[in-house]
Length: 135
Image 1: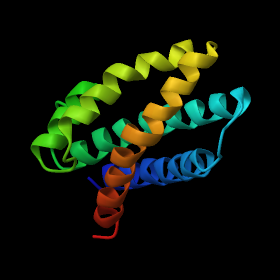
Image 2: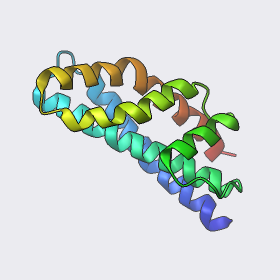
Image 3: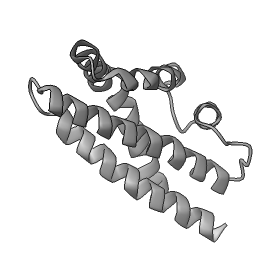
Image 4: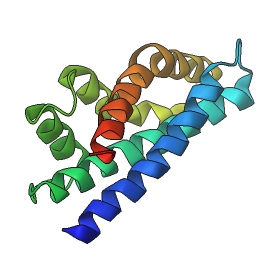
């Protein structure tokens, strides 16, 4: 169990860094296409690290059946690590939109979704896991 505890905390530190960069990027007013691409990249990294951190934390708690983003999100909702299960499932489905960021209109739409809908739930997870990491 000791290694699992270290593993999720190390992954959490990486999630924290990626989320910090995403937060900074989202502060840019009227980002150009290159900046939008950076925001989307930081979002992708934050999302991947978020669900993997959830997976590692849940495994450390004894939930060994968590192997995919969907199962990690469902279990995290069941045990109260995340509150807005619907937004997390939307995030999982909309994650595929980031593959089409070469289209400036689509990139703008994705950046707005990240800013308005997905960053808040990622940050809420960060705060929850930050408390857990200090226990």
